[in-house]
Image (cartoon, one colour):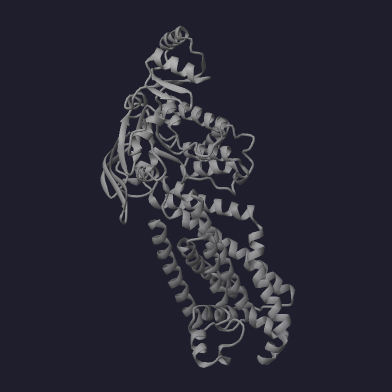
Length: 306
Length: 257
């Protein structure tokens, strides 16, 4: 659905994208992950025909955004940071406006608007002006507006930024439903959990370059495995445990130690048995499995995270 | 569908959007019509006796003299409203959404311009209504009324395109509301409030040649049933130039964003 090679974009001396390659198969969710200022929004703007790239080969839905922008526009729906709703219009009027711009015709356009209001739980607020909506409602309307023309490819630029946890969960549900209907999703986010939850493939953008790309589990394998942190009531217990487990990573001040391990029930059971044998009473136990945060920090920091 | 049909259709959709804005925020019209109404009352009732004597008559004669200037001031004031609504639209990001859709490029701006011309006409009707209420009695025949309508339409159209460009150029909404205010001053430095003959040389030359003067002279002639003379050609030429310049400037700024 999207292929891009060697995409570059600079504003004067400031290089925003320094040659990135993307491949997003139809029907998948692709997450572009990166900190603020990494170039995520610029990438979306280029792919959605808002701005031109300085260099690179790009095909979106089979067309070049630079030479056939209208063909690309006919296939996509865009929402997120730079897309918006018309605050003076009601929720329904916003959707009908989109339907009219897609030339759906009066009856069909109104039907589509009602469908989307229903789907995004906005039916009750349909007759209220969008400026009175809460952040979550506004975002839902925003996404619904991007879907009026039943696009095959949807760009979601930080769709859950600033949303409360409940709204975020709803948004994730929406994204999953869209993909179930065969829509391709290009998502940007700075939340690793979001990419982990939703995406088939994740690319990490840092300083205008893609520093990693792959399935979430592949990326997690890029960083060293997990560990278990044990905390004790006093020094003798800590020392006894350190001997029993052969632990080298001991923090006497915190009365805690870390041992490598994947946190499986079998390994924990063996560990606790060894501690019981040594008479070391454990206060608390924390299992840390590598998540995309570790990958992210490892890839975007100069020194490895751990 | 051909490109033209699509442009007309999308422009119609955008016009409906702008008219709905107007409907949601009717205070804007009263705000825009308020200033010229205040100037009308101020100039007629405070200065009108003295200024009318200068024209060889009285308050009633001055009222008849000042109406075209007030009408142009109304158009200039409405331009500030246009620039603000264009600038607001650009900051709100909905325009970015429009740009990612396969809609006629010109539709967004055309919708704004047509909506603003309608808004300007509502203001003009209010201002003219107040003038009639305080005793203004114009004497045009039906043909002259059509001419007045045409002159007001072409002036609003031209000034609105210019205001649209100013709204696009402005970096902030505040800036967009300030720049067009200069347009409301133009009737003063022209034949809007006093004949240019009484002004000192340098100022007079500017006042006689600036675009609003021939427009006001044409309106004045049509409203009193006098011949319009060469003023109408100057008025038409200025309006065409301002409309074209404003359109090209606005289009360039819109495409560059």
